[in-house]
Length: 316
Image (cartoon, rainbow, N blue to C red; front, side, top):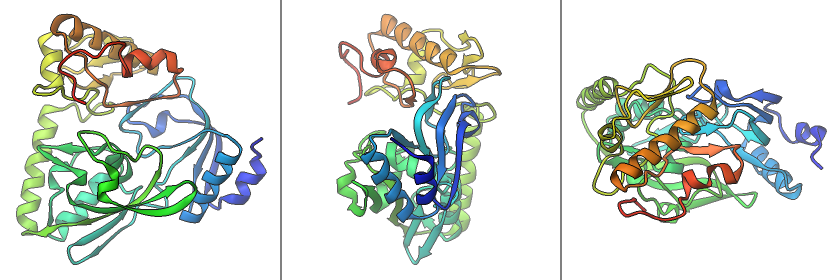
């Protein structure tokens, strides 16, 4: 049985109990976590993982909460957050080492300032570097893993450094689901910082014009099917503006669901289902979610994440 005293002895960082997670997600929804922990060191993370594993106590790592939907009932178990102590970045020549907790926007900014090209197109993507690596975030034809050298992780309660190949990166996926990402090491080519700043500015403007960046959302809700775009399919089915409680399919970008005020996780999940079923009925394409569903009973989201049958047109 997990002991609060034992956890407090393992961690010098912040610990809180029954912490509402709505303030830690970009959807601005989500119930409480039993325990919310901000470990201060790699050693503390290893100790926590070993302790929770031994006690068979569930835990997750939550970054900036930008690619998740957390249930209204919250999370039974512990939430580990790395933003406070793992938001560092170190640059030596063409090599950049950054902690998993650093915001992706700050990581991009540092690379651009030092004239290192390759991630400027990721400007504007919400979330942390760790979360971006976990889902292999990308935009405009580039992905976070493109210039990755290796990743430091906690694996089976111990520190390990994995070469890029072991990450098995693919479109919006990786093989890092069962480890805790601590930092990434990258190698970039050089470019004029002024040119990179202008390129980043143009892409940010393009993103702001085409996406509802001023409203609570989790970014793109669905993965793009092979040879098509989720937003095009959703819009072609007349789903822009469709509403469920406080959750609405964005009028600006059909692959975004926004919280227009007072939305619950239940509203959002119901709307995800409605979009999926409508698109499938009208086009035969099943839209696979890009966001993760946390804290929901498995039977409730099974049909959302893993449909009974696999229609054609789904990106593996």
